Image (tube, rainbow, N blue to C red; front, top):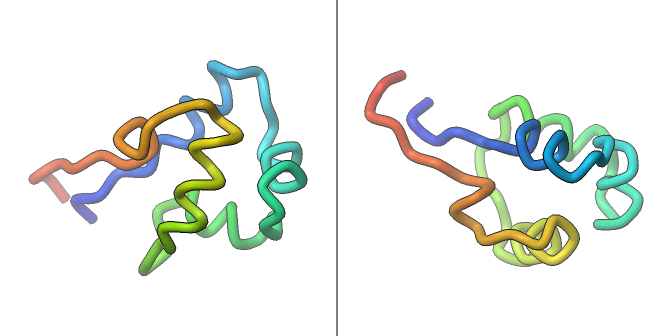
Amino acid sequence: MPIAINLDTLLRERGMTLTELSERVGLTLANLSILKTGKARAVRFSTLEMLCRVLECQPGDILGFSEEE
């Protein structure tokens, strides 16, 4: 998949666990895990906005593009 999800890096940089992010964003741990592993087929703008608010980042910090599969 050419879209990379960089949640692991952001969580590590902020000293936050996926469980803590789940609680602060209001998403289930299962849904965040699906996103984190790159298995999500879509991301709502509202979800992306909540993640950016909590992680204090830009959408491009979470999502990346690579031509390589």
